[in-house]
Structure formats: C-alpha cells, structure tokens
Length: 203
Image (tube, rainbow, N blue to C red; front, side, top):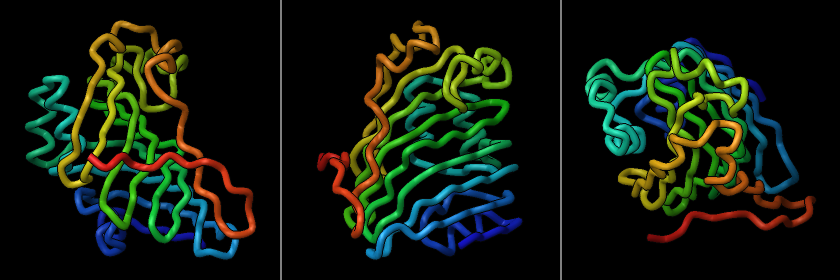
C-alpha cells in the first residue's frame, strides 16, 4: 500500500500517530509481513515543520539551545527532509532507522514505541545548527553532524524522560557508535522466525 499527500501533518493527525507535524509532502509505503496484521514501512516527508513536540522540546532544553525552543513554540522547527524505516504491528512501532534534517537541527533516531501502553524507548543523536555542523556528515548516519549529542528518550511518549551524554559531543562522528546500543530488532510476526525484540522500559 502506498499513500502520497501534500499535507503530511493532516495525514499523520488523522491516523492518530503524530499531532505536532504541520504541512509537508508525504510518501508512505506499507508492505504486509506474515499474517498477523504487521507491516514493514518506509516514510519520506519533505518541507515540514514540527511544533510543540514534548520529546524534541526536552532534547533542545537538555542541550540549552534557546533559539530552537523559541522556534518550536512558534512556527515550529523546519525540516527539509524526514525519513524513517519501521515495522508496525497492532501494539508496537519498531523504528529501525530514522532521520530529520533541517538548517537549524539534525536528528537521528531508532527505538520502540509501545502503542498499547504509550511508552517509548528511543535513542539517537541531536545535532544543532545542522547547516554548518552537517559538513562532517559523510562520516556519520544521516541526520547527524560532525558534532552531536547522543540522547535517549524513555517513559511516557507525552512526557518522556531525557538523558543526554555531553561527552559524546567531543567524540568524532565516526566513533559515535560507542555511546549507543544497536538498533532494535523488529518483532516476530506469524510465519517468521522469532527474534528477540527490545521493548520500552516501564518507568
């Protein structure tokens, strides 16, 4: 199944997934996996703004970027390009790889969102002033600048707990994997082998 729209925010709000996205062009592909209502998905969004997002606000606060806080509370932080690969089951979204790139901010993310409990366990790197910081991104994952802070979001998605490793900003991007775990393994579905999947911790 493929969904294409010139109002990414409207589509995501209508689906009950994300309420903080405004505008944007969306391309979403969902491929059925097994017979238990699971899908492997790929999402691409361009020219989009994020407003009043608790997780991003907590991250921006943690690295003390005042200008970005004002943007987030106003018209929103603008991203030129957002990409995500995931597995969606009836009670879990497993994000295996995601990135968001804009002039003022770059993000990478992977982890698990438990749809039934509203708990998340996400990790990634946040890179401020990506327009200049992204010069070194040839040696990092997409969304990560040469200077970036490893972070983790856990607990309730509406009010997550945030931890940021300040020492990671001093580590060259190519060695950043030392500060994070491998991406989560998608959960097993009917008709497939049963890999071990990481689930959010109940805090």
